[in-house]
Image (tube, rainbow, N blue to C red):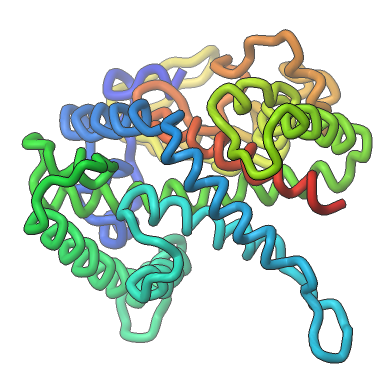
Length: 354
């Protein structure tokens, strides 16, 4: 009910300190027509990007680079080094989103600089809002300012360079006359935030749950072996291959249901709202808790169990019982990109490692 009645009965209402870090033009905090305008641009960019061969190729190259770095991962004494998988998933997600949004490769010095500031930004995003030098909150605000300056420099450089044959995310963004320069910088930061945190958590959760279910892992592996058997030795995956990853999609959906990337969102009642026997007074804050829906046994049989097969033949992807990326006008516009990246990464993971 709350997701579908945005701006009618409820309104997005994040705590004020979040605005200080994200910026007043962030799509996560703006309201009404401003939000609609930014989201429409995001949807247009995602739609034009989603199954582009260049985008899919970039994902696969980065996945191969990350997975390939684990081979022979031992020190000079022959002892195998431990790999923190969630950190590797973050490296992958950040490399993909920076390449996609800013056209930067992982090897460029400016990429490392953005990552360092971005990590400080993420650390302070959900922290005690005390702006005193040295606190995570203060460091996050300062990191955002540095990232903004870096992004402005990249935008200015691209603008001065003029048009190129390769039209990418940044070219489309720069060609938009609907956004101010400040909104464009904020839009890039929102894209980095969404593409980094959501995707890396999703990949980590998929691997976590598959590690506990040998049967589902075997089914995923067979699916990807079948896809790979029909391709040349070093031939890249394409959009048609992604469409064949049906069981992989069931696994991703179930990992989203069980893992709950987004636990809850912030809303405020715009008027007195009566729901069943409850009265929500105007102005009260409301926190819709997604995990309460996803783990509700009356909505999902054996709700505490990881069972990808529950998605077979079911059209629950857009159901009210399943809202891993929010819902209504604030449904995450990049949700499908996160799934594509997770599926491609999983392809090379299951074919090369147990």
